[in-house]
Length: 429
Image 1 (spheres, rainbow, N blue to C red):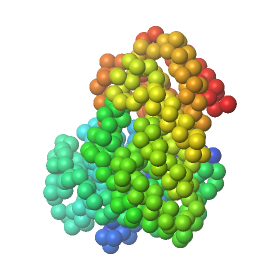
Image 2: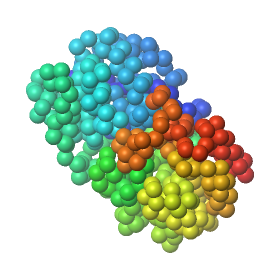
Image 3: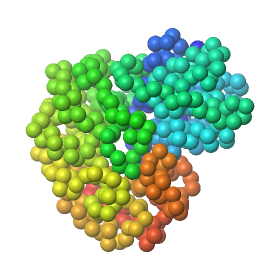
């Protein structure tokens, strides 16, 4: 089959980096297995430009695919654009199956299939094996109800098949790197870059995060094979920057140390950036030199807040003493720290914001990433915030950079002032 993967242009201000652009890992992850199954696969990356949707649709129609697959890591904020693009593709290519995968459709499949009947099927959860089976069924005309892990319209009614098995061996499916021109993708100031994923899921129970629900459990790639792949990307494609998509790749100290040592053995000059928890950094104080030797330049640390009540509400499971120590340890080893800070909780006051700002200054992180708490359906926080008024109805702005929920004691303009003041005070140092 001729299968087209489409990465739509994303509206989120949080995803735009001037002159830099990272490849769409999720689409490449399903592209590799499809290529290995003998399909003719192509990628349209609408982020370049970004492309007007009319041009995306025209490019899709020009290739005359036999199936079109949409997906976007932006999820909620990306859905309105995917909806519009898919509608255009359906009109330009009548009868061509349209498949939609990702976090948002996994949790909103009923509404999507009801409101957007041109969508043939939705991939729920991990896509590598599910997409292979779905394309095989579409190609042979087999019943879709035999494909686990999807949802589709049956006699005009949305229905879901049985869940797909969790992928136990993440190395069984390869990334379709040949679908992109590596020279077009960059990060860290124009350096050739890719996005990778060492692990999936997280063992922690933070209510604002959907990693545990979507991925079900924490799993990891073979650490040596993974290091080999990064080294190969450097040697063969000139990739310099590796951006980890993992929420928490350092869960297992033993496995993580094996990866670091394997990458150091490869003797490649890489810049590694990604996210982890502050308590893992403190736990690994004795091997942080390996982090640095392997190429780590920056970690985003999910600190979220310092207020004890708020930390209990979001079930962060961290400690302010640990957060401060993690920043200190990273600085000692020449690794930048970027602290995430979440605002917009219901009972916040000016006093809470002032106290948070002072505590952040005391933490002294190298950078700050300010976020608004956002009630995505795949997070436990969605239920916690079920009764809170929504003040941002445009889902394109559900990107953590716009306030979505009203706060009880503060108008949105004042929350925004504190948001920006905290950013300026931390970044201007």
